[in-house]
Length: 249
Image 1 (tube, rainbow, N blue to C red):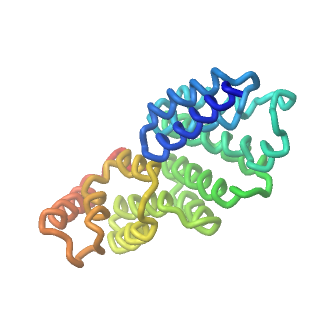
Image 2 (cartoon, rainbow, N blue to C red):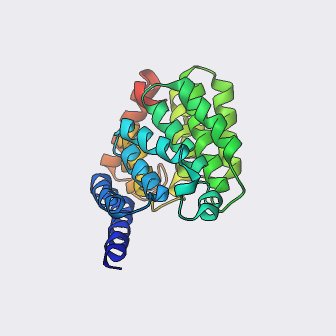
């Protein structure tokens, strides 16, 4: 009983640290919980994979997601719950993003296809579709298949409107010099406040420091921004239109 209580405590605290954006601390707590378990709890390995992904440790993220994907069903404590919560599809979605981040575009797209194929109707179906199609869109944008990239972002947003999809599409519009469309997407992101730790992490990864200043100010563009924030955003906009950031795709 005591081991179970300790494990549960580690999981609860790990989830809190993850939600707060303290991914390395979350990993430490998930490690303790996994170590104490007699049976492998693949849901925890999946959570740890997410923490590795958002902390930038893509190799370990891929390793954890792969364990979930190849999980031996006879060692899963609650097979019905495992299937209903779409852990296989979620892990494929996460691994697809990790592969994209390290430039393994072919593997990322293969996991995207498998994710859609493995997806079962469950509580997270729309969220999984929305997320994995963002990754697929980024892959095609990276390969300069722009029409397909924007098409897949459209599929993502149709499944579920997310801050991530609007952030990505807004950044692409900026790269293409379509500032009005970009600003419209960035304003949509404001509707998702407060942003999650994962979304904040994603914004930082895109190096949208001036845009982040715009969001943090809590105002629409041109409506009450502080002079400093407005200047930073305007300068960044000019720099992107002339010299697009290499890490924005």
